[in-house]
Length: 494
Image (cartoon, rainbow, N blue to C red; front, side, top):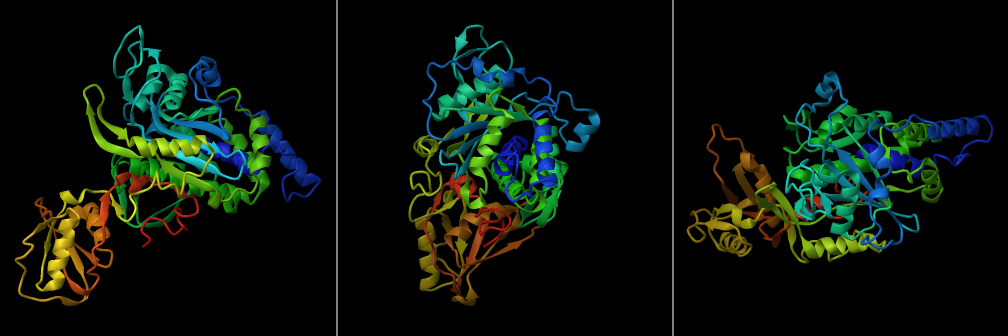
């Protein structure tokens, strides 16, 4: 998926077909750029199996589609497919599992009508939606019939049931956003994209390891090659886990790659940007209307786009474990917030800053329900009793609320101590006590106490209101300059 985004944005930010690049010196240099642009037009055909992609909109009936709105919408798909990959490549990319022939990643990329903003909205692959009408022929999970059906299922399964055309129609039906162009790629295309852009910058505040994706990454900031970046964006068993955490990591990588295209490793050279777009084209499948000429037109209109003019979001989710017999665990969207998000996209408004899509006013969003966290407040006196009462009012399960120890509050900051096995849960209690310091303790064996202990100090005793809102914690709309490795919202930065 990111390979597609980078191929698109390389053209958008670099001016693939603009002839003389901004800042280029007329003469030999501009002729070299022009020659590279010509190579882009004449680069090898997209990968095999592209017919369904090239002709995708020939199979999308005009009736019932959302109306065209201002701006341009591109549906970007990353396909879970191993066909054509050698065993050596599968081993290197750590993708030896069973392919599902489904969309592993779906994102809507919106370019504003004024060409002053790019918005990317991630659609979780397990979203439970109603498919557009189609005929099932036994491929994929769900109802199988030769008759036309409109059954529900995970949105990533629409590809297996009806290919790119059904995917486009289902996304349009679920979001109300008209898709103008479609592009897709696979694992090898992603690796090639990152390598061609000289690596991707990623950062983490702690060591990461995920056996399923093959990820082993020490804490810190790194420039990863395509292989390691693929492992990073595919990981689902690192904090935060699941699809929302994975999509946020993908968006962070995409934001950093966009930065590389506009400055530094690649974007500092117009020739490099042109060559990157030309080479990436061979790893991506496009609809036939998504020509390099079309990209070239957009390039001139979007020249100089900055990270501040990009924004990223994930569709808000209300239920993260909605069980369906045929499909297993699925995600249900938060209807009102999702509709508000897609209305912003449809009407060419910013997706950041809208209260209708953000967290509840006056409360800090947390990723665990307070009711799932047990707390014991140690100490005596008014401070300990107030903390216990305030935490209880917030929904936390407070033990021995009025049977405190004899000791009074200690000097210094209030401490939260806990078994480090529950590190993820500790963030919810820490959000409720923003002035407290966390003290994790490693516990030997398999018995892990789920009780968090609060030891009041003379500082950090204030309890803040929190609300369970995992979508806002892991997928809230953000500007591209606020959550990259160098932004104020970078991972691990307080």
